Image 1 (cartoon, rainbow, N blue to C red):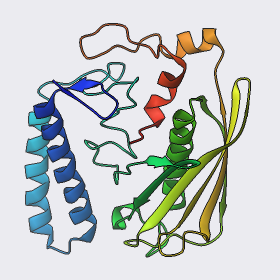
Image 2 (tube, rainbow, N blue to C red; image 1 turned 180 degrees about the vertical axis):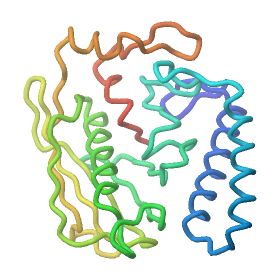
Image 3 (cartoon, rainbow, N blue to C red; image 1 turned 135 degrees about the vertical axis):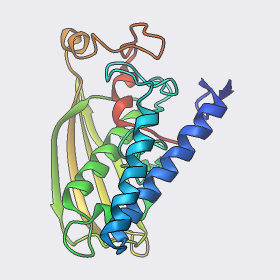
Length: 238
């Protein structure tokens, strides 16, 4: 077992394999939206993909069971749709500490397209929500998203480096207010998207109900056990 940056142990070989598969799947998704091969080739590739799916579904887990590599305390979620190294959906985005919160650089390919040549607005919301959650975690605060407000100043271009930032604006009791932006890496001071989020810590009885069926990979009940754990499904900070 190898410790990660947060000191939590994980299986190095399994992590490498999950990461390798994630890279391959993201490459496949990207190729699938760029390809111009003829229908016959598309059908043959589809058959190969279905065969691969059959191999992967030979052993699966229920959605209430965490993957073996996940660690809520260390904020490690390998299949998170924004930060997960094993996710076919994730760019993936790696948030790192900043002086006032978190920051990440990323470039989005055509699989995330909304208007031609630009990022889908819903993907902007997904990534910003993730950033706000990561900023709350890094500040030792947490909660579940209660409100997310987005101002789309300009469209976010595809295949162009952008910088995502988020920080805590204020906190009080069970509520934390966060602010975030998406901007071109070349002009980080000019936001393309601005966001404001309100995260609320659910009452204890609600937290118990929300995570009542969550187990670790061995099947042992493993709900979030300390304040920062509960935001881990939406977090991931280097």
